[in-house]
Image 1: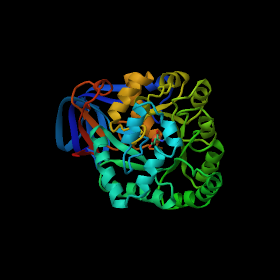
Image 2: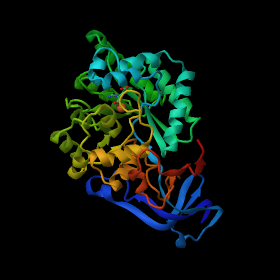
Image 3: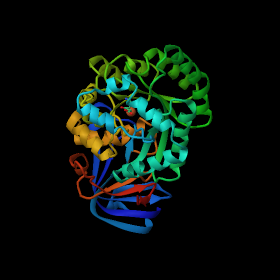
Image 4: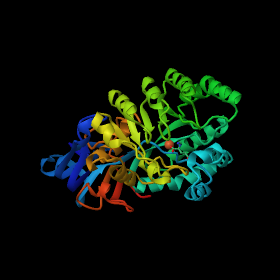
Length: 408
Ligand code: NIG
Ligand code: FE
């Protein structure tokens, strides 16, 4: 076998076992190969295993000095393209005003919608670029980005097109999702908004490949299950996947509705109870937890431990956004999933790699096996557990995206 590049002297080569999303007890099956090597050709992994078993020829060989190597992290939930800030909300919340009240009085998400809608394409790209670079430095090599701060179609399109432009600027794969975040405040306008979204926007998104999924925020201050159902039907007809922000403050049926539409993932789940846990465990839908929100808003932690024990497939994301989770590091997101949601270190790594990839319908990343894209993290240490263990610094020394070391 020939390779462009052979990475050797890997103290631990760490990868989720099996294929696809791992659920229940299988979320602890992390495979660790000692004294390993990885061969890369054309940006893909073409061989990996114990170093002594390598029989091929590599053009370049790099000795990693006895450090651990993991798959690049997959962030399945961000809102990385926005303008303006939410520092006043942060101050207000610290003085006792809650997130939902700020939203109900026209602030919060609605404030970021106004600032984002008035930004140009160039401004949105310039603001998002350093955020993505921070995320990559912390270990993310695939990053989902939602729209949802546009509100008007023009402004939503500008967010989605900013994501397209960012693809050429960052060494990570960007996956676009169109988010229906909050509806118009007037009841009649609400209905017209959904009707236009169903008949015009969603078909255009699919036709022009502007996103691969839609997402709907189902909550008292956002969309109802009835409205979301109309959007999901249109998305499925157009060949787009469905995602949902559900059970963040109240379990009003968003999880059950999304599962009934075969949703790819249900995200948040801070207010999920036994019924939602059981429904997710019976489904193929990924349960994506976002512990940065629990930390930043002081919400209960999503029941990660109970979801896994019930047999669900759990993923973890940063939910990077200015209002509920100003968190840029997937390494910290998975470290918080251990502290706040009760995941074991192995489960947290699987939630941030194989399961997060499944939450984006990606079969190209999430594991270190032959045939996957060579998205890899080289740690500062020899032990993979330093990633979930470390707080406030990243255990990541080097990031490889499609076989090339990224310098951001
Ligand atoms: O995932 N909950 C809804 N949407 C985002 C927050 C967006 C914002 O506050 O700006 C979330 O938490
Ligand atoms: Fe979100």
